[in-house]
Amino acid sequence: MRIFSGIQPTGRKHVGNYIGAIRGYLEGQERGDPAIYCIVDLHATSVAYDPKALPRYVLDTTAMLMAAGLDPDRCILFRQSDVREHSELTWLLSSVTAYGDLQRMHQFKDKSEREQELVRTSLFLYPVLQAADILIYKTDEVPVGDDQRQHLELAREIARRFNSTYAEVFVEPRHVIPDVGARVMDLQDHVAKMSTTYSSDSGLVYIDDPPDAVRRKVKRAQTDSGTEVVRAPEKPGITNLIEIMAVSRGVEPEDVEREFDGQGYGAFKEAVGEALVELLAPVRGRYEELRPDEDALRETLRGGAERARTIAAGTMTEVRAAMGVGELG
Ligand code: TYM
Image (cartoon, rainbow, N blue to C red; front, side, top):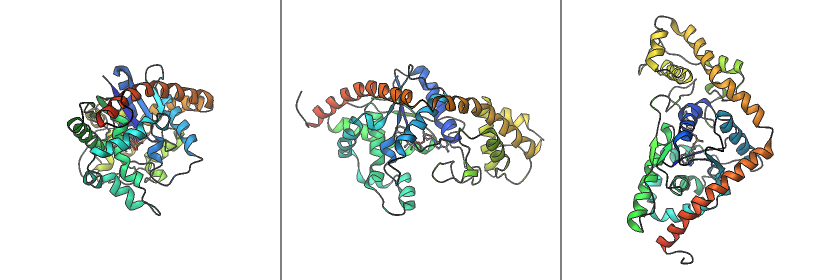
């Protein structure tokens, strides 16, 4: 079972990333043969960014993933730009990607509308690079949050079109989206997902927020009318907190509803804050230990890239032969 996922080096990662995706990476690490996790610095160049800060953000994200429990002895952890085959495959896959499909991508529409100066072509091609990331490892399963659904559908479509146009090279990957916590919402704005780029500081909880900040943000989270702690469409704020609580404690949402039946929002929010602190404090502690040793982090990424490259290069030999480009083997 080959497992692959990617995460952007946007500096600090938040509880949505942890609950929606990183938990899945940890579970995948137990089953993957191998499990491959990629810090996608090339994707980060598709919007305005700071080239001096990007390498630092990659190290932040590496340390954060390891603090959360990824173990480079049990998975392949690497930086996307270190394996150049991803870029080459992006170009080649664009020959089996419909222009109209890329125009329909929600994330392209959202992000291009928000760009102030320049809508980069790389933002338009972003889903093709993502497909290349996944397909180059002949991935079976991709653990992701709900917001990646459309990108995964496109990756499957690209694999199918390549296989029928050229030769059976690629595997059609499945997404693995958690039942609870697939879309953690902004604590202040319940129609928006929690997001590093778009949420305000009080709308998101960073994985490495100090315990006091975690408690304060949860306490000030927008709630809904009424007093009952139950999941309901008209109670998006409480529903979000119930899901966060359930995942933090490793129980079902129904258990949370039962426990807080009749207790009101105040007591409930205090308990959610505590549960999140218990989940995040050990990760934060390990992060503070791991982050200063940059040589060790770079070494981890180097080792990961070497292992990833071996697999990627094998696939590229097949792709080039199938497409009739490059030297014939
Ligand atoms: P990124 O870096 O935005 O997010 C990393 C992972 O976190 C999930 N996630 C969430 N889950 C639940 N609730 C939220 N509020 C929330 N916010 C983010 C995302 O679904 C994702 O799984 N395009 C990808 C990176 C990528 C990738 C890949 C993913 C590049 N190549 C190949 C999978 C496979 C992204 O921007 O993730």
